[in-house]
Structures are given as C-alpha cells and as structure tokens.
Image: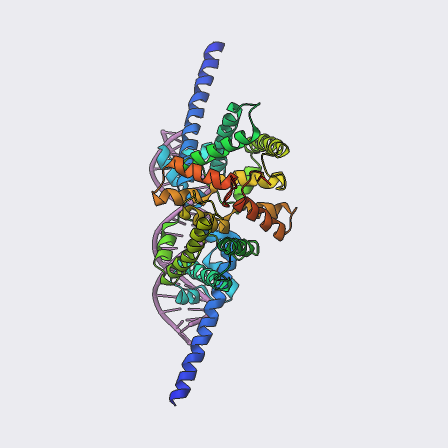
Length: 207
Length: 207
DNA sequence: GTCTATAATCAGATAGAC
DNA sequence: GTCTATCTGATTATAGAC
C-alpha cells in the first residue's frame, strides 16, 4: 500500500516535471527567436499544446516563464563548466566558455531578455535557483579571469569585473546574428572571428 | 505681397520643423532610456506637451517616430565624421568614431531598437534619409577599415564587414551600462576600458 | 490540472469638432 | 494642426466547469 502510493506520487511528479520541461524548452526557443516582449503567452501555450490557463497553473506569470528558461540555461552553463579541466589553462577555459555561449546563441537556444524591464528583473532577482546559478558561474569565471591575469595571459590592467561582463556580453552580441544573416560565413567561422576580436582585439598583433 | 507670402510660409514651416525636432528629441531620449517596446506613444505626446492625435499628424506610426530618431542620430554621426581629418591615420579615425558612439550611449542619447521587430525594420529600410545616412557612414568607416588593414594597423585576417559590425555594435554594448551601474568607474574610464577591449582585446599584449 | 470562456488592461491608431 | 473622446486589437491573467 505504502509503496504503491510512493510509486504513484513519483510517477505523477515525473509527468509534471516532464511537462514543465517541455514548457521551458518552448519558452527557451521563443525567447531566443523573438525576445521577451514579442513572445506571447498564447504562443507558448499553443506551441506546447496546452491551454493558456493550464500554463498559468505551472508558472504564475510571463516573467516566471522567462526566469525558468534562464534557470535552465544557467544549469546548462554550470554543467558545461563542470566538464572543463580544473588544472587546464584558465585562459583556455575562458575561451571555451565564450565559445560555448556563442554556439548556443547561433543554435537559437540563447534566450534574449530586455535588461531594462523592471518586472523581469524582479522575477530574476527573486528566483533563488537563477541567482545561485549566476553566482556559481560568475565565481568560476572570476577565478579563471584572476588566474589568467596573474599568469600574464590576460591584460591585468582591465578590472576583472569588466572582463566578466565582456564574456557575458557574448551571449547577446549582435555581431553574431549580423554575420549569420550575411550568409558569407559558416557558424564555425563566425565563432572563430568573434572569438578573435574578443580576445585578440581588432588591432593587428605583432608577430 | 509675394514676399509677404514667402515669409509667412517660411515661418510656418519653421514652426513645424521646430516642433518636429522637439518630438524627435523626446523620442530619442525615451528610446535611449527604455527602448522601443517600453516607450509608449502616450508618453511621447505627454512629454512633448501635445495630444497624441497631433503627434500622429506629424508621424503616421510609432515605427516612423523611431525611424525619425534614427535619422537624427545618423545625421549627428555624419556631422562628427565630417570633422575628422581626411589625412589622419585611419585607425585613429575609427577609434574616434567608436569613442563618439560610446559617449553618446553613456550620455543617454543613443536610441536602442530591437533588431528582430519586422515592422520596425520595414520602416527603417523604407526611410530614404536613414538608408542614405547609413550607407554614407558605412562607406566612410569601410574605407578607413580597409586602409587600416592595408597599413597593417588592423588585423587583415578579419573581414572588413566583421570589423564594421563590431564598430556598430559598440552602440548597444551592454558592458557600458553594466560598468556604469557598478558605479566604480567614471564615464571616461569606462570608455577607455571598452575601447581597449575592443581594439586591443582581452589577451595580454607583448611589450 | 486541464479546459472554454471571459475579464481587465493597455497601447496604437482614428473620428470629428474647432 | 490641435484637441477630446473613442475605437480596435492584442495580451496578460483569471473564473468556473469537469
């Protein structure tokens, strides 16, 4: 009797979680494709294949939908960072993260949120999972940045926080989409180009 | 009689133009402050001090308002570019334009438009003044980019178009606002930092 | 929890008097 | 051209039956 109940509950929870994951996948794609404002809740519901009211039972607001998608992306980032060698060169790890970020964006899986929307900001700041993930990722990147600066691999005159922001900014770099729209370069070429401008700069480098 | 008419018409036109310039100033500031989606036409009208219907007599849609603001900014860019020495080092001129762009943004006068909005894209593409300005600016920058590459001042392995996009992208670089929000650096320091990461890159440079 | 149907609101755009 | 008042449509969110 007891075990039957346990199994039943667990099964229900699995169904629930699976549905929420499906919702988050859809939201993630729509956010990447058209951004927060242009994404409507109707679209999300229709795309998932459930009624809008049902959607609101899972997530109490549009902002919470977006936050859930961001949590999902942050988890993926944490997972990727965990695969990088702890004893690798800090600069290599940083480059790997930047590359991963741009790959995600070119694949159409990087949500784009307006940084000005205050309700959205509140939803993100109030989301424990998101903030924890953000802090963990920032700590990992921050440690690599400082290590790379101590090694003389990264310009030590630039404040670490500016480097961190510059890395994060690759997630919404319009140069990627513009080059992609141009159709003259493959995704891999685009990534190499932007990686180069990001780390090496536009100036010619002495041999 | 004839001259009186001419003067009268000219005066009316001046009034009209002055009002439209006031509208554009307001739109420019609002676009810089909150972006296209968050800016409402009601706000614009209230801020200018006229009724919404009157606003629509001047500009037939919200998109046209934004396009007019972009034309205004493009003119300012053309005016700035015209002040740069024709015989100056191409790299210096490019840096000057990037610096000017970031100063505009930090001053809260750089409109920010969503690159995905198709109605807005159509309004911009259909605006002769905007397109002409964009092409003229791009031609000037493009010439400097190629010259700098031939001189060996800018990395010749990067396609000129990628350099151009990278320059334009400074107009919406979130690193600027993030650093400004941090409050740890002056506007001038922020500009120097981003200028450095843009042209010199994050990597340490050999002495 | 899921649905249909509807509320409530907001924003872009317009009618029509002056 | 400017105004007040209104329309229209889209969008977030909810009520209430099953």
